[in-house]
Length: 115
Image (cartoon, rainbow, N blue to C red; front, top):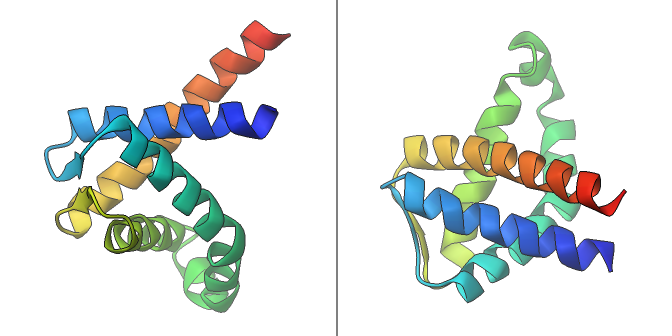
């Protein structure tokens, strides 16, 4: 049950980011939910492999290269989900950061309400 709420909150975060950042377009809330599911799968299976293989550059940049990985995965998600468009790398970078922040806040609020 908890993972369903997290997916809903992450879908809401994606939908809100599309309203805030002009380089990101989401067709509907249903599309935002699908983006949340795809991002969850990508972050579970692909991101750890990429982070492992980029450890040397991550070490040299003091972890800042992780932002680049997150942006590329966010941008790649737009190629997989129809109705979700990310225009340009800077839009992907800003979008991935803002989605993470909004998700963190929403999940914190949900945890506070649940406890």
